[in-house]
Image 1 (cartoon, helix red, strand yellow):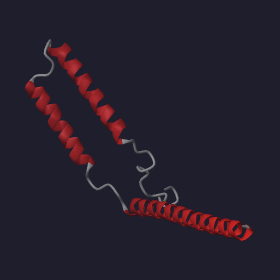
Image 2 (cartoon, one colour):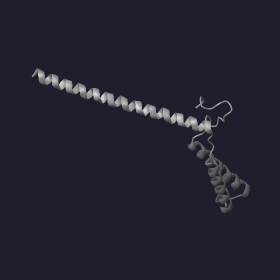
Image 3 (cartoon, helix red, strand yellow):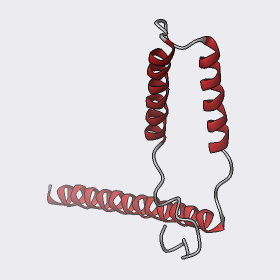
Image 4 (spheres, rainbow, N blue to C red):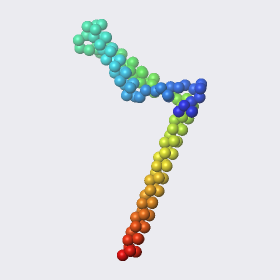
Length: 119
């Protein structure tokens, strides 16, 4: 990726977190908010429905914001190059397997013919 991201391009692809990490952070923050609400307002049954609703609206807004297009041309080029490399690797692996299978068949035929000739 670094070879495709120039010095002036954003480096956000190099430091991204996994989806699981982000969800864990959000859940931790929601739990902290719940504890704060329990302590601050003396709630014994958890969030009030208004507080629940506001947290869920904030979370939904955050999810929508995260879906916005953040890819620039350098990032798109880097992703395309990675896909090409992966495709080349898969193609080379498939060719290698086909060659091995062909050699194995050829070896089996040669061995079978040699056995038949010796009998």
